[in-house]
Image 1 (cartoon, helix red, strand yellow):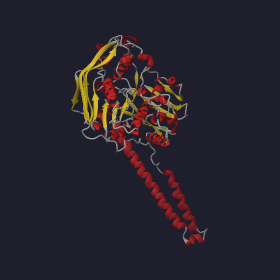
Image 2 (image 1 turned 180 degrees about the vertical axis):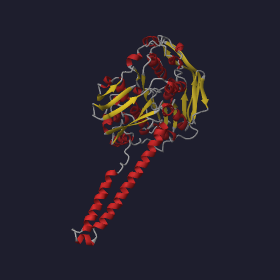
Image 3 (image 1 turned 135 degrees about the horizontal axis):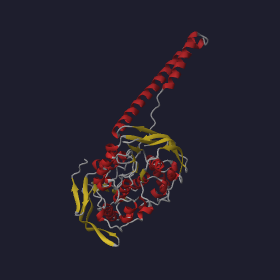
Image 4 (image 1 turned 135 degrees about the vertical axis):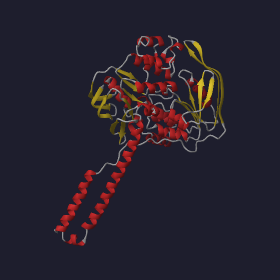
Length: 501
């Protein structure tokens, strides 16, 4: 168990308060998820709980923690020094071989397929997550703090993770964008919001499922708004009636009458009633996101007809074959998803597809890499990434779009490297809109977006008039956006009958 008392965290650079007077106790059996829009401080709060000193370079904080449990922390980003470990060094360092925790052996990770001399940096994104989860479990913590644990995990491991969270004896506090995971595991919702253009923060804690929270919150907001507006309408009607009575001829002529005093008493009663007015709900507005309706791909146009005898990578100065006999044909305006086990080469394959499509002149392709640093210069400001022309009209348009995606003016002036993972993803998507891309090549497009933003993103992509070729393990994305699903296997791409539709 751990208790947080009156925790307040603020950003040193712009003095924005991320968390104010936060109080919470994590008890045995709790599976608590932190939700909220990108940049609202979810990961920052998780870091504070693990080790407040991690925030020293960029945040001020007050408050305290009670309880001294052994904490296991999975960061959203893998540390650079860890990438230089070999698999053997990693396993030995965390004593995974000798751990008594049996859960680490049920993670669908075949250690035998790795060379012990293989560097962690050469593993797929999902394999890195699995190894780090194994390391946490080997240390047998009292509580688990997980920041986006589903990032890059394949379907089998996602199902394992859900089962593990549900049956874990230690309490778990996690941040996740994966609505399906949240729906299937969380029994406490911690909702962090930034209101009034991110000048005011608020948090809500409810001990209920995510589906119940969403429904209860929506109904509560609707009822509160209806009552609040009705109160204001009644007040306006009463004040109109008061003015009519107050302006009657006999009262105008006799300002000292008893009747006038009664009328003034009526005014006081009306004004006093305002003290009990409910506030019109102030919530964090949804993002505005959508592709122009004029973007389209003709039906039946061949977007790609691509064959690859062998999908290979360099590993330990040797050539490793991941898959063979791959053939992909995509016609306009299909929206496809590619799934497959971690390490099978999905990202490697998508890069090859991107190379083919980005050089085409008959289409306008845009590529979202799984690693944002491949596309973004972290030392530049967002506007410098979005606009290269320097024309005032283009700059104004870009700022307008960023505002719709809930970037504050301060965040627009930050360096890209200071933004959250979700905000970086939004920038890449905005770039595709501004450039009029009609073919989107997306590697895990929803991996860092909040469960509150994702429905909007999915809605826009499902209505997109162009073609989408994506890698994803987001089950809601597959069900709502994609028209066809393929699984990459060692023997090629296989069509799937999607169970998510």
